[in-house]
Amino acid sequence: MDKNTLIRVGVLVFTLLNEILTLTGLNPIPVSDSTAYEIVSILVTLGAVIWNTYMNNNFSTASRVAEKVLKAVKSGRLTAEKVEKFLTDNENV
Image (cartoon, rainbow, N blue to C red; front, side):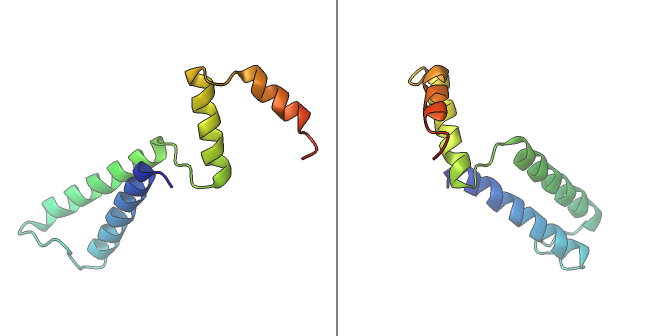
């Protein structure tokens, strides 16, 4: 799995866990002003959700291979015609 994907998922899990603890009355990061803490916590959670939604997270083997093929086509190392020919030649595989 890609390092950036792991970081994004880690931030998402951390912020969701923090949000759950805050909602249950446990403040993992104690601050004097609870209202400010809740606002910051919600903003961080929303940021993590938006970030994870926006980024293309390739978890499966097929999606990681597809990403490599896409990058090869975009960089010119592989042509779309070669990919189409490969797929046509290997339809029964």
